[in-house]
Amino acid sequence: MNADLRTTDGVDTGAAATAAVTPTAADTSAAAASATPATSSAAASAAGATPAVDTTSAVDATPAVDTTSAVDATPAVGNRPAGRGGSPLLERSRELGGGWAQPPVPGTVPAVDALLPGTVPAVDALLHPTPMPDGTPATDAPRDPVPVPGTAPMVDALLHPAPVPGGTPAVDALQPLAPAPAPGSAPAVDAFQAPAPVRGTGSWGGAHEVPAPAARARPTRDRVEGLLLGIAAGDAAGWPAARHRAARMPEWTRRLTRELDTFAEENATTTLPVPIALNQPPEPLRLGPSDDAEWAAFTAEAVLAAAGPVFAGLPQDRRLRAAVDLAWNALAGQIAAAADRAPEVESAVLPLRARISVRAGLGNLATGLRPPATGHDNPHYFDDAACVRAAVLALVHPGDPGAAAELAEFDARYTQDGDGVHGARATAAAVAAALGGAAVDEAVAAALAELPPATEIGRNARHAVELARAVDSAFELVPLLEHQIVDHVYSYGIAAAETVPVALALATAARGEMTAAVPAAACLSRVADSAPALAGALTGALGGGRSVPASWREACRTLAGCALPRLAGTDLVELAGLLGATEPAAPGGQFRHDTHTG
Image 1 (cartoon, rainbow, N blue to C red):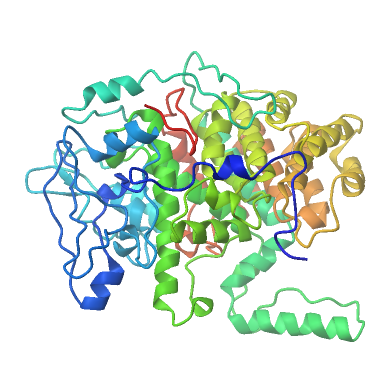
Image 2: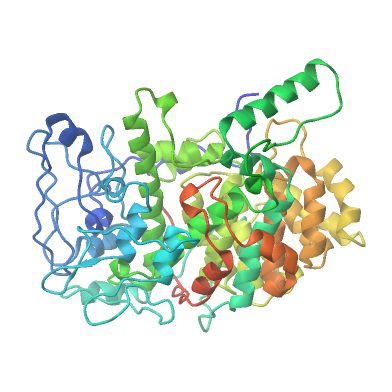
């Protein structure tokens, strides 16, 4: 069955999502990449020339870059000369409300990709600004991080921040960073500090006011740890994790597994093959997290990077959107660079493994599309890839489900539409409620409030929760979900309309207990690629790190790098500590790609 045959009931995913996707001149003159040097790879490589760089900075010390190549007049990706009267970053923030990185130009490689090949280019440049002679942090001279053995580059950079002049750490995870207005632009910053109430775009009740919480709560480290380890444990519990982790084995081992599977099919044998190591070290095949946990860590990187010095000139409620946008564009740049180096697109060696929706979204970004088109023009717009990311973004708004849902939608629009976006909003709302101390029924109710009743995901979720309330245990619920919720028609079991309802129902039936919800989700083999991870996310946030058995904690705390190789060795417990010390975003802020604010 073709990947684009699935539809979402009751939702028009057409004109509304594409109405504002064509970039205008203002839309494509983004100031985000002012934090990185411009590189016109196509022009420079063709002529053997280095693009000229104008180091004249604007009033906020953000370097302005001359985008004119000596040979090709095509502007370099994501750069423009600094304007008058303030930082281009703040100027763009006023124009679009914070979403500021421009799309890659076809035929060129985004500047962020050219910074540090093989590392985390954009985020590393943000967290390690090199001081200029006058003491101003310069983002046009990034330096390679020095990794500590046994840790991932990103987490290591956060644990060992490079000092800037004056002895202040580049990223002080223990001290909240207040907005630092650029000289001459204080009125703009002040204007953003009291934003208008957010009007939700995904609530089934239509546009609604999201109330600002009386005080900005901070989730305890225990709950953050429970969230990350719950995702990892659920991810590891599903049978697909072994196949994902087998990607770290030599290719010939996977080829032999495929041949054995063909043999079993052709010879009608019931002895089915499993991933094998043979004469290779078997560590990659042992119990542990795989793709879901790694994409959760990808989102956690953006949350931490938002507290970096590059975003200090933005209002606090705008920083995370900027960091998310930059992270996606940096990843798209790496994809474009890999394709550019290969003789044929099909032979490109990509720096990651990802869902169809994520691969399509990154491809759309690389060709110049922007959200919401990157998620709408996507064959797997309906899948649940954004849901695990949404669970991590809920950390930014603990106890505020509405604001968490809005932020989750902003991120989801890069890869999803329709039920894919609804699922992300529901996941974020439930986890945010749990992080704020809500009980399981309150958290599930917050999720249901984000699901339109006329959609497949809305109908399934309400029916699944009704089933859960009528049983005595999560294990008793499994056959009911298998027969009434799970769809056995489509070729992939990753539809948000199935996995999110399953996770909500099992959390309800288990009364928030991870040790009951996750094994039950793993029993549903068709949705075992993500439903256990989503169930683990919610129950982990409800019960905290103490709800994760010690044996699972040790088996699942370290990432393997099977989807995002650069994350190999990342310690989720250490990452939870960093996230727990990060100041939550200020209430308010418009998290929409298709809304312009004056």
